[in-house]
Image (tube, rainbow, N blue to C red; front, side):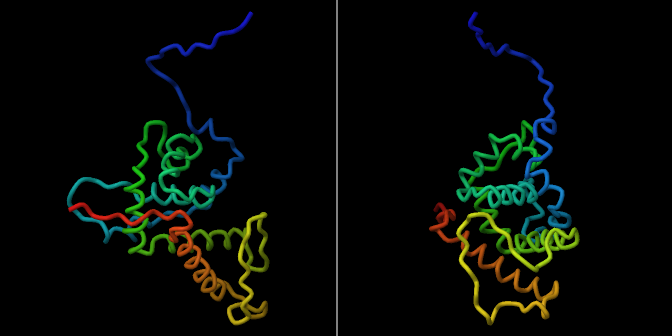
Length: 199
């Protein structure tokens, strides 16, 4: 006999988001090492002490991490994906009912408050330092997937093995991070178009 699926109306649901995100999911691994402590203090000067509460800066950072890791370059698509995907909702601490920011608001944070405060660089550096502490990276080699990555074979900017130290690598990494963020801001790479203020 052919079965017929029905969706009975229920008044209450018991749903545990934690159970629905697989234990081996990449975002679980990233969540273990993402260090966002103290970030609110970094951006506090860029917020007014009056008015209604804003979007939590940690939510924006977590959404940006999802965008970078999952290769979602469009801010509009990123907001849609976070709205629909249970693992993304879990990573962003939204639960089932949490509201995802509008893509235009998300864009204003990324191009405004976060750019002015240098927060993205601080989160990136804190994450790399944590990876160094956990011996996940050593600065001795590089392994990548099949992505096309332009080579940086400039001998002037390279670090000889005997000169390598965490401080020297950090400065080289800061340059690489700056260039990466500048590439993401390039309109050809999916950056948001400039917002014209309404008169």
